[in-house]
Length: 283
Length: 215
Image 1: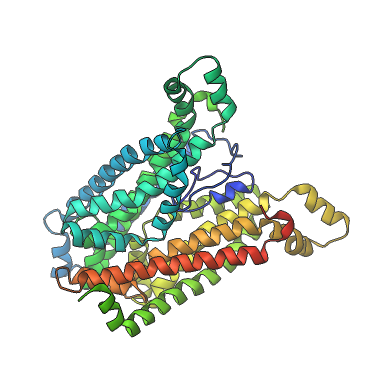
Image 2 (image 1 turned 180 degrees about the vertical axis):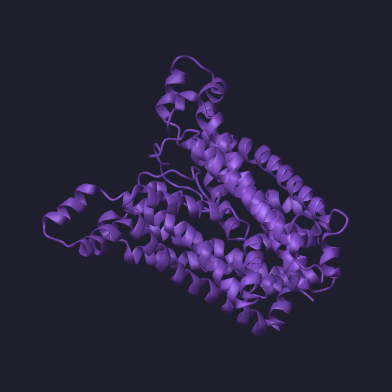
């Protein structure tokens, strides 16, 4: 999954390919890609195609589900607003874990690129790489055994799982800032803090937004596994659909999960385009 | 029972699971690599086709693996079929993207030179463009393999093969004496496999990336 240094649609020099992975699945090394070839503007296609597709998908699923033959087991799985409950839980899991991921990973990334702590960064990136080899379901299961069943263990697992890629991206992005800009800022007498606040962070905004997107997409996915640790979420519908062999429940849970994942990614991509500092133009 | 006692006692079962896990991921990666490179080769020369391939794969990548499995089960039933389909699909994504980006990144003057010395389109592709695009493709393969390791674990819930079964056995018997051992054995096994695969790719990179473009 994971994607990259983040710019998931960067197409350019060969190095850009290093960035071509699932969200957060590779720690980018080397110089990050320069400008992206396609213009990065909010076009009407971008605004309409995905929501239209999702609407059609949900409508088709709903119509099909209406007509599907539900027996008592299938009805039980969706009784008492269970579908809404699971959907809400899924959104809560995703939002809360993403919040913690960003609150942990971005400041840590900034710290690890400061002069004094810089030597520690390679070790952190090495840990992040091993972390990527860890299966999310195994990590969640271990945390559930350690912390007990419930939403808390699921949240901790999701945060641990997503922090490492976002951290690696933040470090790579801050490092990629042209050092002459930082030096120029120091040269006109700005303090280290001033340079960070007025030069480095603004330049790193696209990267931080990409980190938000990476974290969101990863977390929507990991949240489906929260069910196995008693954390709720849409995984409940999918898992009970598989165990009870009730296809309507299975398909409903899967389609809702897919729609939520695509919607979240779409919103994050819009935010990436809208919030990027103007001066950075098409880069 | 300590973890090592557990591992020693279940050695045969664990090795069989690990073997199945590795072999499922490996076989799916071979298929995904072939398909991915072919898709890359077919699409990279046209702006819209290449972009469509990259956008589509990026979108598919955002779909959670459990949900994709959930959509495959009604079509293919449980077991090996949905596992293999899901693994190949997810494996394709990084490879297609990196193949398109890598092939487009080849210096056009080199391709021109190859044309100039009379190489056919196929020869240019096989002897100039693909070797030059190979490093990013190999990176895509590494990334995809690591991802598939984790997805194969989830696929065990749809009765797929591999170490994921060990993890789910532990999850379904939470609180029992062996739950921790089972989960730990499955998880560590997958990490070890992922690292072994990664080491193998580093070796393959050494052996197959032409000396002239090695970074």
